[in-house]
Length: 487
Ligand code: UDP
Image 1 (cartoon, helix red, strand yellow):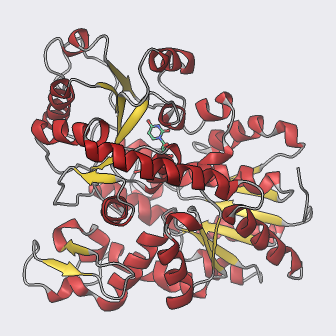
Image 2 (spheres, helix red, strand yellow; image 1 turned 60 degrees about the vertical axis):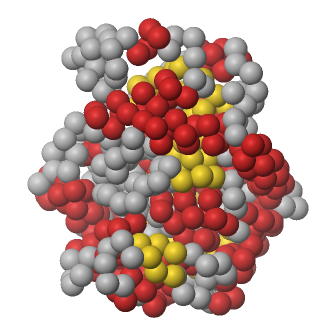
């Protein structure tokens, strides 16, 4: 492995949600592989994600240093040990109020962060976008702060235009479409599809947080983007040249996981043995399986899950469906979200994973020919890297923006037809739409065209992270620039 700047020391500080920590862990591995000393600032609950990565990079002769900070859950009225958004969304009773309290608690992390910055004086702090105060915290010690949003250039440009021009305030109803001004493509939304942070009027905690995030990004040293140039060149250029941001693209970071062990151990403990999963996939024809997963946060009602089940059954196609429910207290075959006898009927063609799936391992298998996704950015990019067409079922946050990228710009996806953004519970879609979406990405003529475009992008993704590729070079350029600063 190269060791261009062995003395460079970076702090990585992710937000406590899997969609944020997982790419941070991948980035930590990437930077460590280039000889950078990485210290991860994390909570007790999330530390295992970094220690697992340490197992995987032992051969590099380096380790990610892990510093634990106490998450003030009790102080904001959350249960002891509620240190990851996951503890709320998987609690059985997720509520927006608890999520808000969680965000409020993160503000109290400035003090412990500053203690660590003062003590270890790293050369740079890479902090999650949700910690806008991190730029000032780092500045107190003369340390540059980089922002990690966890989303791509398309969403970053769209959000910037929305904040700047506020086109959503110029329409007369929630369902009226408006054009997002000054983007490379003609992109339209309705107010209904915007995340809560964008449509709240007045000064709420959330709207204030997002304003602070915007201001803190402008004051920061720059932005690290989990994307690759060839995926969204017009938006990568727009972000840098028109919006004037300093940005380095280093993705897809998931591609740093190459071995079976890397893939199987990514994120939470998988609820299925990877060999069992591979055996099942190996028994299927290429491009014959649809993978259905909605990330680590989105929830669905039992009635919605029932519609998904019926849609999958009606499609006649093979599927792997990840449902974040366990069998606790439920008799086999008596789960209220599954039609009677569903699993028995689907025995040969459907696999339900209750809990956590080894997603990238599954997506990369040749049997998988389509992905029904909530369009979280990690999942979107993982689908692109695997070269599969996607059915976009956005729920919240940047997911509606990512849907547009997939369906209108890249043309490697179809919409299932979600009109309304939520915070936690997805909009309702009928079984017929699920069936139609599966057909559209798996077996239709359109699917073939989308697949060949997706495969080409998947190849470009792999080239981008290889030596000489655009992401590889940008990562090198960032490390070099940081190493040349006085430290
Ligand atoms: N993931 C996984 N198994 C699961 C669910 C999610 O490995 O069962 C991973 C997925 O590969 C992705 C991350 O968790 O890297 C989810 O991030 P994303 O941005 O897609 O969605 P979020 O969870 O933030 O809504």
